[in-house]
Length: 439
Image 1 (cartoon, rainbow, N blue to C red):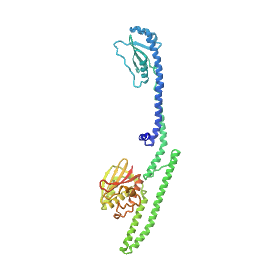
Image 2 (cartoon, rainbow, N blue to C red):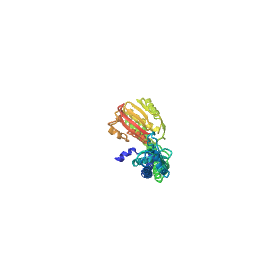
Image 3 (cartoon, helix red, strand yellow):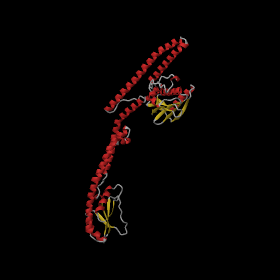
Image 4 (cartoon, one colour):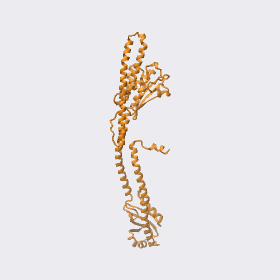
């Protein structure tokens, strides 16, 4: 359960995950070393140095003895100030009470203040000015005593130098490592781009590079792509040859039937026409979306052109909502054929159709709606399979369909990296067919 929850916050891209793998150990190590250094070494050293100064201050308090005369107090401790490298003075009575003065980054100073405050009798305040001096204020019978001494007697010199140096070189080595890691990940990214483009019907030039494992995967992809392309080409050539061979006897049959009486020949002519339509549809399905190269296509202009062509044929085809501007890399002929098939089904099984196009930053959606009987939800999966006729849902007497229209549309959508979604039209009440293609 914990790892499932953690997956929501893990980066998705390969570069981001590689950066996380590089940065996390470095940051964790730096935090660990910093905490250990500050808590153990820096704090312990500061406490030891403070204890030495604390003993010297107690010696001065003992030498001064009980007296309320400031001059006598200073004269008693005067011989000891030189050897102890200290300076002392009694603040005048009208002086303001001293207060602690520490900067936000004065970690060692806080350790010194806490130790003196807890161990020294008469402690008033400490100050750490910017001139590398330390000021201590004590309450005595003679008044408030100000002791001035070098800060280096209490705190280590440049205590943050190790941390700063460690952070700088850690950041530098992380950047260098990320540059090398990026060079290693670039061949994987190119392989992923080539595979994604091939899945969307585009052939991007690719040559295996990088580490041995990446080269092996790249070579396997290139071989697989070549085999698929050869298989598609052989299938198209084979079916084209079969179509060509079958058209010849069909033509002869039409000529022979033309010489018979029209009444006797009509049933057989209808069968021949149905065989011709079946052959043409099967050939279109075999071609799929393999014809033409991807090009920049304006979906709105393509939709308008297709709708106008159908309206010129006297069909009730309306232009729906057109949203979004820009172009998409598509095989224009294949996408046009897909729209033609959907509109043909819409006007065959309904009385009117509506075509709309929606273009966003992530996807393209081409929608065709009709007011026909539609397709039940339980049969929509079978509707996109080749040679599937849904007799209860669609009336075959309304047209000469052979069950390949939606299969061709599905094949074209998949060749562009998209899908065909069937549903119920909320506006017209019939079938709603969406071609959704990721950009």
